[in-house]
Length: 212
Image (tube, rainbow, N blue to C red; front, side, top):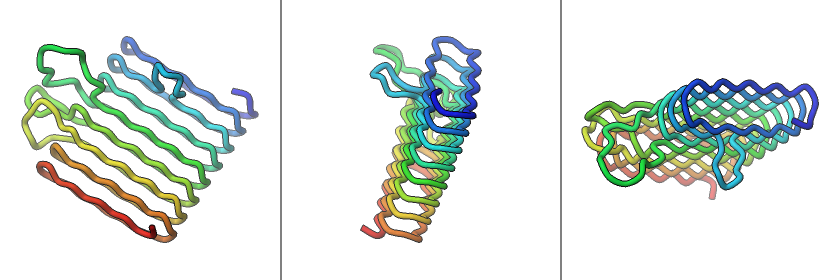
């Protein structure tokens, strides 16, 4: 931390957790809690788990599941980012290395943006494994919410994918995925757009493009 009045809190109570935080702006807050197994806020190629170089940003990462990756990068001011991962590695087929069961990334280069990613679920017969979500906001005053789970479809993986890219300002995007095999992509390049995607069941695909 090289700025002024920054705060960083970290709690690790599981095993094999990895965490790195870099704050170079002023008045930033980061809070990371890891209580599962082999979770990572960052990765082994040098990507910082929580990187805040603007001012008055807030970043929260909670990992209570297994084998999850989370990354937050905020360069603007007054941004809010939250990643909550509680995905279990079950059912786990035998053979081969364990996959990363949940991956989430948030990048915000503008100001006054808010982004939330919530990945959860998984039981002995209904898997929420192999979920991926990303949110990128380059404008100002944008809101993005992504929720991914599988409580419906029995199988060894969920495989839901969601990606939101908002480069304009004053946009809102909401993506909800429940089931398996869903793909949702949202791109909003101008201002004052609103997008809502709800996917339930199996193998749905949605593409939203506005202002491009």
